[in-house]
Image (cartoon, rainbow, N blue to C red; front, side, top):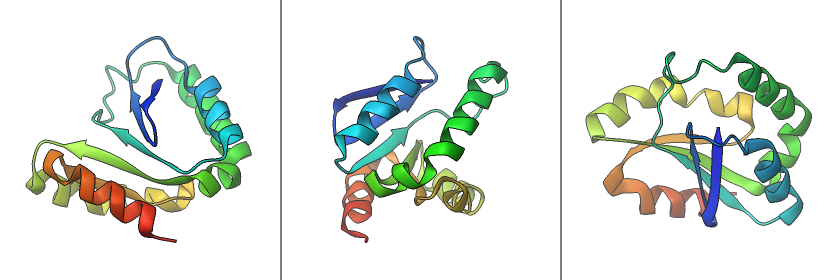
Length: 122
């Protein structure tokens, strides 16, 4: 998993290499400023073959869930259309409880509004 912070406070997550998620997430936690995680990647068994990385992330999340929830305003999964967004929202939404912050699914056109809404929610 690769984290790109060049558009902070929009932090993009992708399945591209190199994998830098742990150091980047640690840096974001230490920075202490609110941000939103965004991705265009949907879970895919072919791409998500790195079980070790998934296990490490799950353990990291368990240890850092509260700290992450303090600075992460939420996560947004960007999909191709509003129809796909609506159908995935019911599945992805409940994951927010596990992560400690809201997770939304939106179409490309809705990114700005979704980011703004997450930052205004307390």
